[in-house]
Length: 268
Image (cartoon, rainbow, N blue to C red; front, side, top):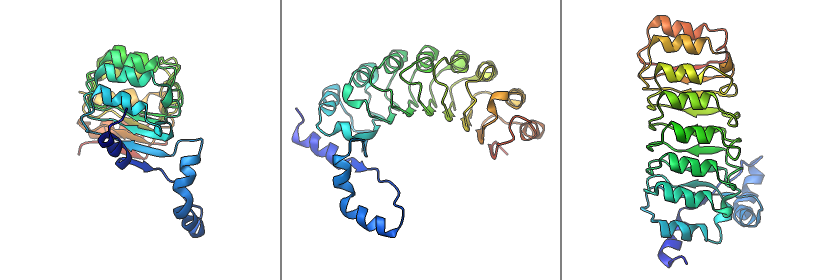
């Protein structure tokens, strides 16, 4: 049972995700009716931001028993020290089956937690997953990449996880995660070997944003990326911390497979 204090915390951090109105008249009508419409809607319309609230597992379980949790579309739980057990509790919760976005950054999640997410029978509508700043490795990312439950993921944020070259290989050989549009791999210890493995197949064919910052890359990375046929839809490439030469930058800009690239982020 929720304590009055915890229920108040949830209530004060739950906000409406409003649809864009079609015109000024619609905006006036929505101001009066949108909240009640959202409460009655079968589709979730709310964001719940519980980042950095020092939640304990008992409170997490209480949260999942909250009467309005099924109305949450975006759930943010960064920096709560939930650990693998907390993720297992979330993954097995049927009340989250309509969740579209889940943020679990900086929660001490290891491969075990990633495997729990991958095996969840309830998170099939998830489209955005933030797991930055966790100690998850290649085994965990392989579970995510091969998860049928998470096949619809479009944004995957893995910054700061020690994935290593094997993590790049796991993503490159993904059997299910084929709908990625934004992939954030900054500071994941990818290296040239991991980048090569990531670019070998067609796992990146729908990716429009790729972040590879601070991965110990060099000019060789530019050649690998420039020759990757799967990157034909790429628009934004983050290569900060790679110290690319002008020749390497030119290689990227003139690649026949990167013709849609409009934002190249490099050190100058």
